[in-house]
Image 1 (cartoon, rainbow, N blue to C red):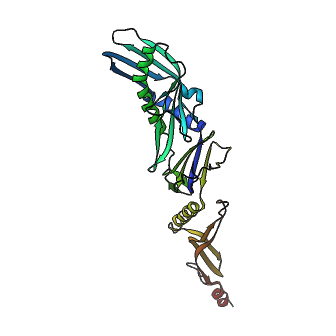
Image 2: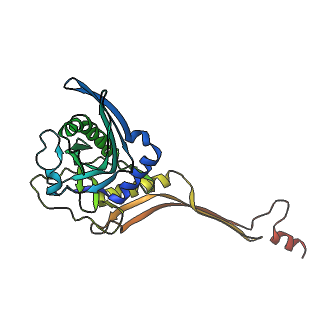
Image 3: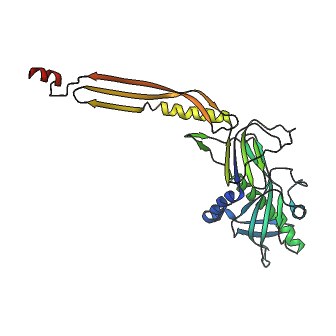
Length: 308
């Protein structure tokens, strides 16, 4: 994996992703059920399936033993070196039958390993195969499942993984869309990052933070742009940040208003983007009236001289 210059990186744990899949399973079960019929060697076979438990995400590639038993997709004979996840179906129920014959049922754990790659501003999902914990013992049944079920699981697994998009992030009132140039998979995080494209010749891994279910890293240049935009948004409101009106009866009346007009020479610490320094552009407006005359009343100094 190359080391890119990042603008924004968002990392999420498998537990965070699993919660989204649990909601999908609870609210949209119809998306996780299916049926299909297909003619093989002159015989029509029908197949039904159901995800009886919510699917989940396993970060990282399957081990060598599981990969050997995986029904590979196309020419996928080797696993990618990076960016591999597994969509695991803990309890996939299957029922299939040849036309006019008795039906068979099977319920087992199934996994679809897939490679994730940032391509053309998006995340491409390449399903690599299907692994079944307890495939049928009968060779004809295995052939039916390979020919009929596997293509549907690969398609459904790819669709579910594509749907795991990270939404636009909100920073300081500004929305930042993620246009991925890097997808990284570690033993803890799935990371999607924006920025310049990684150098393929570089083999060093990015040292992501740990200890949180979700993390977000923002580069100093992006912080500066967002802070300036947020400051300008506040300035455009033309609302006073200081509004003082003081009166000393019969002596003076003073008003003072201050309007925020933006930041000057904003600087972001390159080593700690949470530390910022800037000048503040403020416009002041005020006035003082001596010996104010209240409506319907004379000046206190004049009244005093008239009573002498």
